[in-house]
Length: 480
RNA sequence: CGGGGUGUAGCGCAGUUGGUCAGCGCGCAUGGUUUGGGACCAUGAGGCCGCCGGUUCGAAUCCGGCCACCCCGACCA
Image 1: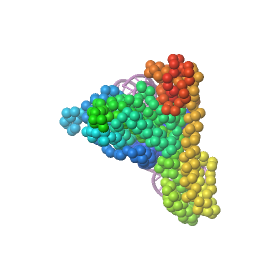
Image 2 (image 1 turned 90 degrees about the vertical axis):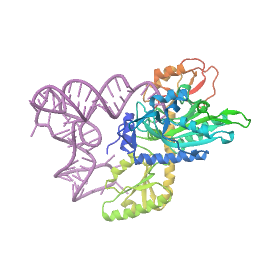
Image 3 (image 1 turned 180 degrees about the vertical axis):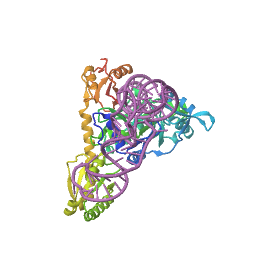
Image 4 (image 1 turned 135 degrees about the horizontal axis):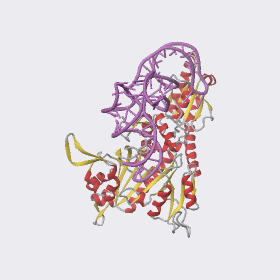
């Protein structure tokens, strides 16, 4: 086992962690990856966390087909423009050409819109609050494991509402109570909820909101998005209902998604020079027992203790494993640190003699802690919670240390150019897309979002770039 | 899809003036000694040298084409 690449070469480090921690592997299909058991176990825990919240906010799961008639994509002008370049088409089955090509879904607004139009007739049918867990395909030019793959797993929620206000409330409910809550509490990654600028919004949306997280190199990652689609898709697909006043009205729809990209976010928000650091709430293995022995007698003594601790922890609801492989302890320490297991439990002859075990948190390997065997089942859950909080606190402190308020554009450019400082720049912006594009061309920084929580616009405030009157408080950053 | 780079054992690499150039380290297998921060010794297994074509008596090595991967852009969850 070799160390992961130096974090100075961040792209290399990221890939090393993904592959060496057995999260994923390359597949024979370009841009597609295999999610290995360790990565998939993490994803399953993440799915559970999000799905619980999706249901708690009143949504139900359903499933739509993988294939979408090509013509559906064409019905919403902006949508087709946004997605057409990257959709995979099925044009032939066997040796027969299909009468109409089928799109392998890049997202399902269109086919869902088509069906919703048939399901909605009356205001009494509303709202429709559905979600699906599925895979989608977007043939991206450049791929990176988890962050951008040709096929990825996600959930996509699609709702229909009677009024614009209700749709907007839904969009924000998902953003805050599902995405932000999940990412911050379970993944221990602080995020900034905000609205996307016009140029960054979803193809076909009225308004797009996102939560943005900072990665370990100061770049931003869009962790989830929630779109108020207005009446765009409802009009294109004829989702209409007769309201209480007898009028036939066009419905308001939303859509929202979070994907396996969140795994990439987790890796980059918490990983360190030794590898992954899994937030305990979603860690596939929360505690790893490393038995230590020399002689057979010792092994027996230790085995009894390991079994006792393992059983007690399992009963306490801890995801625990014992590593009995024929490797030396030091080798195992390094491997489990690479894989980011939150707590290591060392159990050896010395511990057996004193009736205790040694706990080592992934967040601080020097913080070894001796705990009486009888107290382990009580101590570990508490320690896991401490680690969860520590990871969040560290990520937040890092983000704060890399968040700036540029005094002027010169300072802005300097911050973006210096890799050791690179991060979020908060600034006033005029709201002009041309100005936004110029900033991007000159600094590579884009507007990540316009934070929902922001300072009041002071009198005389001007755009950080063009100097015209300010309109929006924006977060600028280079992004994944 | 543009610019750059790299393809030799599972991984990391050396070898590239054409001719004992099929090699090293790690990993893997077997046996032994070890085991509280990545052990050591011994013996082994493992290669169409990315693919196709050309030049040549002879190609990992030279030429052409293709493919894959990585980095930097543009595009995007």
